[in-house]
Length: 487
Length: 135
Image (cartoon, rainbow over all chains, first blue to last red; front, side, top):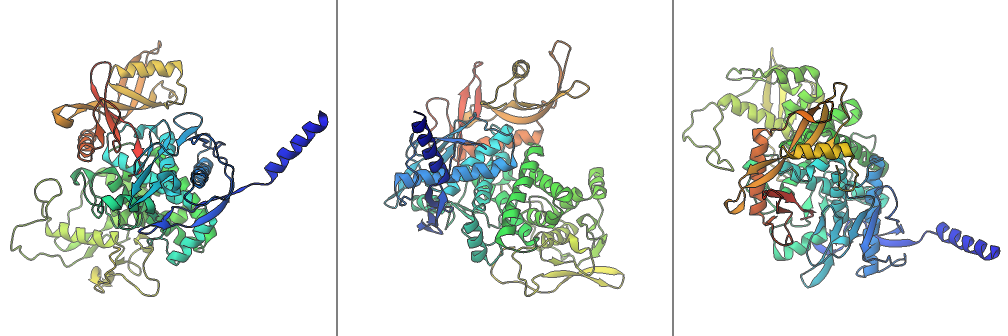
């Protein structure tokens, strides 16, 4: 008897000591605008039902034997989903010790809940579907991007349950953005993907890549029936030029090329700011290599989680989270201050003045006092931008109007036409937001808003501040019409 | 308080007392030295709904609750949503309707719906999230 028990123990030890490999997609079965072409990778067979954030795959009920399966098989899909779940749980678990699922000890997962081109988190668990498009059947649970997006909803629900029922456009959109951020940050935990993305983007992360493009295959499937509902090469792209607008003034729906108040559409504003910040953070590291990219992905997770936890749930939730992220960088991640500020300002999530107010107690007090500065006609007050220069001279557009017209407001009627000094200020702030103003030499260099994708071989500013006599003057230095409108 | 997380008796009592004020408790902090309790909740607020039928929409609020020696609520501050939050909730419902994301109370929410009308014990129509979806 004793001998037999000993043999059994030896066998178990042997199994435990020899981890089995499985194969999965790195981030999605699709590639660009195609439903296939995803990158396969081999991984150690995961154990999704273990801590942290254990998940429990209920459908199918039994796990297939862990080994290398061909894509297109149910066994492959099982392990692809299991690996994505484990990776997402490990990533967020390391950042959220002691936190448990909102739904209970284990998060139930159904890999084939029915027919739909979609996936859900519904406070019971995660549900994935299968659907047919273009003559082929696809399974949303096969995509690590989709799995980690849904897992992200469950994670956010665990740390900020108040967001679940909140009747707010921006709160709902942030939940979607967090799902996409979860997919991106979880993908970056794969060494092969980090290296591949750095190669694909030439080390400039804020370029459209397999990392920024989310759920290519599901996007392709939806595009077959609804060509304008998704982006041309994926479901959503984190590299985008969407600029913040009050979502209450946006149309309720629209094609993917435009911004609407529909939460998935509006989520792209925050995701864009986040992804540009991530790129800027990498640029702030000693080298744009795989090791630094891993560090940045983990630092970003810490900053994001902490900011979300302390953010007030108000209609302007984006700016609350962004401001908290910037404040955290000011105190704990000083190397990332500029990257976060620049990204959120460039996407309009916080204004340049608010970005300064967040960073400096003096400016914060000035904003709090609520005393507006009166501007002379062509002398523009710019103290709130943190340039170290109180005012600059600009050539204001003061020619009399020929027709009393203004752009249409998105809701009803026309926008109020700005006065000359408002227009000048708006123009100046726009230059800052787009990172087109050179301030070095005259003003504080740290006040500059930078662009991570800017050329490194030559300057691409359109304007600069010049000291001429006692005055600082805004001068155009070039007209930029490169056709690549990244801002 | 999560569905999977066990509420204490005191929290249950607080939840019931807040429900009388149309407040749904979400989380509650430790009592401050002066006895005040900070909590997050959703205020059920009437907004225009589909087909002209008003809906109670949950609007997040941050509460400061003061209780007496027996644990009964004496005062609650922060329970009235700001005007911009009410406008946001109305616009949110409009967006749900425009995108076919809001299902009526009867039956199972169809594919694509993220929210459903729920009829509570008082017969009120309440906006409830049922799920988040990837698209």
